Amino acid sequence: MTIIWGASFIFMKNTLQFVSPLVFSTLRLAVAALSLAIIFYKKLPLLLNKKILLYCFVLGVLNVCVVFFQITGLRFTSASNSAFITSFSVLLVPFFSAMILKKRPKKNSVIGVLIAFLGLFYITGGIDTALNIGDFYTFLCATAIALHMVLIALFIKKEDGFLLSVGQTIAAEVILIFICVIMSEPVLTTVTINRQLVLCVLYAGVICTAFNNTAQIYVQKYINPISVALILLLEPVFALLFALFFKGPNGTTEVLTLFKVVGSILIISGAVFSELDPIDKFFAFLKSKNQNKKMNGGNTYEESLK
Image (tube, rainbow, N blue to C red; front, side, top):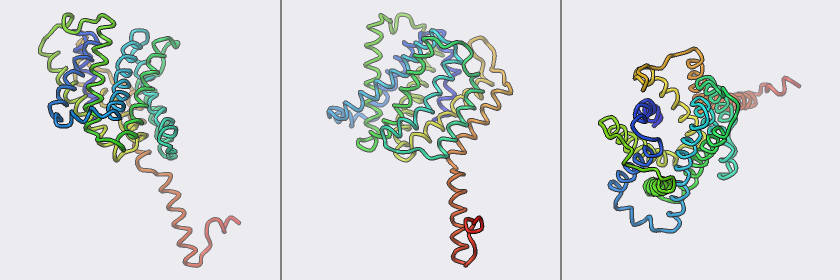
């Protein structure tokens, strides 16, 4: 999933010269909603359940908030600020998990998040200007991302994951169309239709949105939100890798710098550190060693200290 999303950045960046971000998001979600509706058409009548409708509406609103606040924020702030502040979501996930799911994060996860976040500082360049209203909108985007991850973990225990995926996508599309109408944003009349736009909308709609969003909801049955957030932090690493080989709208490829290499290594290290649980395993090893010494009549480490 992370590789798929990482690859999408360079292709969408090239495509946005033919269409506005809001219109592109509307077309992307329309394709995703139609794809999921066709695949899971037998489940559509189940969406009429009031509780499922509520869950799907909440997830749909958060999806739209991610798109709307990120686009709005980019109008007032730099791309590096947007990328860095969006990554604050990984710091918010443990907080929301503790508050909503009543789950205290592991020490390994907290340390892994901090290591990965430091990596994001290097790979995105951190905040290079004074904070402005665009940065605030982008922070709201990060908040929506974190809430979405945690609420999925909550809702998936109560309802069918595939149904939630279909419902949230349809809800998000309806809301986006409503926003386009409110903002008088013409969806089709301002679009320059060409092969690149069609392919990118299909890739972003079917693969990045329909498949990935469904996959995320499915895997969160088995993976906690903090692990998901950490793995998704590899997205800018893969985005960088693809940008090194594919040219952007200005006809050039990304330049690899020492800061980006260090940042990528730190992000990968943070994710690995969290998943391998080295701290817990180390203390479990010490505890097991002490217990073996007791069984063999030897002195424990604590006793030797006394």
